[in-house]
Image 1 (tube, rainbow, N blue to C red):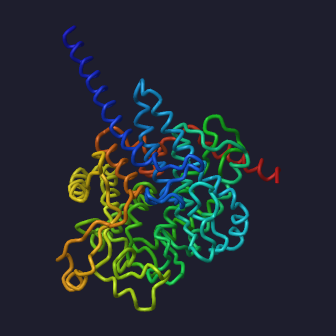
Image 2 (cartoon, one colour):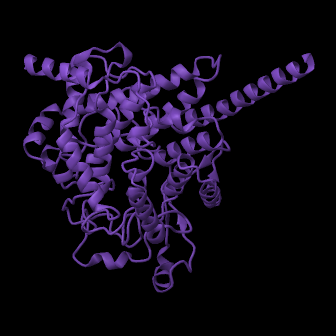
Length: 469
């Protein structure tokens, strides 16, 4: 008995020490590849590590999610020497930095609630250091409903994990305004995840299923959430217009598996139907959408964003903001392929318990990774067709070799997703730690969370708001 007890204790100690060593490896990678580029003033992250001026909200949120994911993994450790606290506060700094940038534009939200147009939209790019606007409303298409939605979604996830992000009643009121902002997603044409609007890139917005899906997921996640967590009161609860949610749900599910009127399919739907949004739990809709994305967009180097996407191809004129009429045919069969979506498929495989899918995309991704001078894995932003190979590739797809992007620097969104995928597949991070509110489960299977309020308590909050106006 004593021998068996000693062996059991030894195995526990060995497993614990091995876990600590693995986490410390990822801590080093996160420090070198993500936190090194987080602005110490605003907390924002750039798209590429070499950019020292423009912070991207979407990329910042995904970077914060990766840092938070490692924070969640470290919380299992008895003595992490302050690493979990540092990681948690870095995530908080980013989420608060985004909030502060948007609060500066709070007047826009009041106008947007009356008229959903791009001139009243919250910006998605800010100066990395000052947090001020970098592009005016006319020079950049800022209307991306999915960005505000993914912020709300991860805000709830992080608060549910115990992080304190929202400090004051004014900030609670502002987050409530963000909810109002996305509630009408079902009828608001926006510029989508790729910030280009319709497939034709002519400056026109479009109704995107991915944007509506993210809005639906955000509304479901934040409804009844207390932004102060367990220490909150009735007035720190966020509520959602149930009719608006139902309209988003019905329009979203009606549009699937299509992305928009101009796009038959879009890789953005992967993030919508699976991690992080989990916007549908209808097996048929999930399977049909995923199948269509794989059939039409999957490649040997990654996924195309959508058919005839000219972004970063050598045929695209970088000096022109919009395309000319009929120009899309120039990009057929030479669209860039993004390994980022291999990573989305790996994470999807973990949440859906599909080991064969995980192995398949790990192998595909492995052949596209290169190591930097520190020996850290680097995920290229995209792969493109060289100019001399364009005609051959157009006539015979996949007959030529794509080249990794020539732009210097690290693509932070890709690295953030890679870190999350590695933590999950290594067993260092559980899906319930990455998704504390159990978005991956149908609503009837989700446990009630701390900080969630009953219908009666939400009614009290509504009465409070009504009488305080």
